[in-house]
Image 1 (cartoon, rainbow, N blue to C red):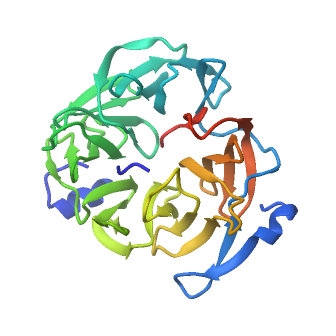
Image 2: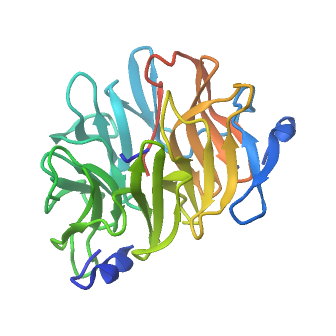
Length: 355
């Protein structure tokens, strides 16, 4: 999870302006749980052994094999990238990537053939991508913020946010970050010790109503409001006003049609999460829960991202195997990338694009 717009009007006006079919063999794993609306909430046990093989991911994804890492593009292209890849986002004629290993996190743009761009930046972890994927943002030391967009792989610099250390870009509103007669620019939400926003219009302000921003798309912005030893509480905002609150989940990616948001456990501990809720963005009701098996025969997941309005891609680890699994809002599960033997002591061989 990533914990972690633009005329001068009131803050509310400013933000408002920019703002899975289940195989028959899996049917016994689907049960009913109490939902927040009083109706039964469908549940699917996240046991990813022996799934059917489905189509490859409809998003860009990277694969590390035999000491070499490549990004597989949606059109079938393969782009060589460094082995210490941690984030990727398609942008323009190539990709914005982040790497982190024995050296600090570095952000750079690479062409489709893997050739790096002229510049690189020492940054915090995390990329923020606009809803239509036309701009990507990142943050560096002393709250500096940049975007790269599809207009000739152009780099734009924003007014820094007042944080110490390196920022973490979380959400980006707007597709053309250079203000013009046809564009109102972009707003980027960045986390430090707390959440901030900076816009291409020079506006810098605290993220409204939340302590840290978790996700954002369209009219919706979600974030953490409080943190304690037992978990977190979060709020989902619509047009900069609180629509609902929860202490059951932390928010991750919002679906492309804005109807659903991923709900991670409110408390993160151990190797990784084993439960994932698909929540209605409008009111927080649980549409589908992928849960841990009581006998322990279920998966841990990472890199959760919406593939389309009805499916989520996750990188899973279970019984010594890594895989990319497609989860459906209807409870279905299938492999998008077949399992590969591996260890939980090393980093996953797969990485999904940020969106």
